[in-house]
Length: 246
Image (cartoon, rainbow, N blue to C red; front, side, top):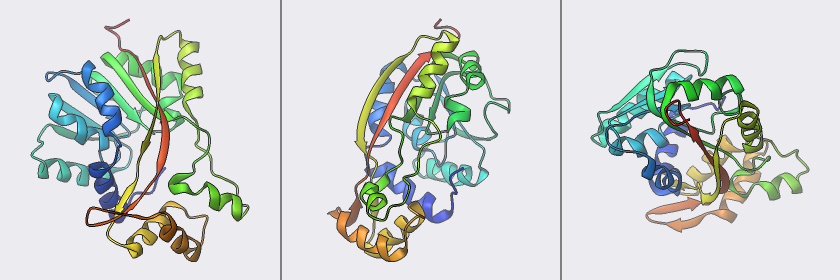
């Protein structure tokens, strides 16, 4: 499980305001949504999709195992004048969840997006459709770190699963699906090089602070009133029908 703390949450909320994520996915989802819908965001984290979709629907349930992320999510929502996001502490698919129109789950791990039990429960919980955002590739090379792993001969970390595992599970269940790959910049705005260094120390623990100090100077570019750490990422957007759409 990703270890959220106040520093990471604050920077994450800045990233989703200024970067491509989750905007590029929400633009793909919006044609299937309408203002009376209720959404369940499984593994919501600090709320990229909950915050982005709440203005377009009736209600959003943000579900996460980690209670630490739910309070700042609701605080961020209220600052935006959004009163239709409800935090739901629980672990999917073990814990109960309300019946909804649409389920969304992004980067929630194999227990959510590659488990047949989980996918089956999703199709029984959402009446209209389910959207999954899943790694398109095997390796985690955030913030152009692939060069660092190669140079220092450190094993590149891998995602616990990727879209191929999800597609295989859906095929085994006989569930029809649609798939699209998107490449986007899930970069990070930082105030200065020091904040960028602190951020990369938290993101890339395999490397020393000295290595990351050099790396942040190499990749950072000026943007707005600070710096931008680019982070090119490819993900699969997979959708399949809920129980009314079969």
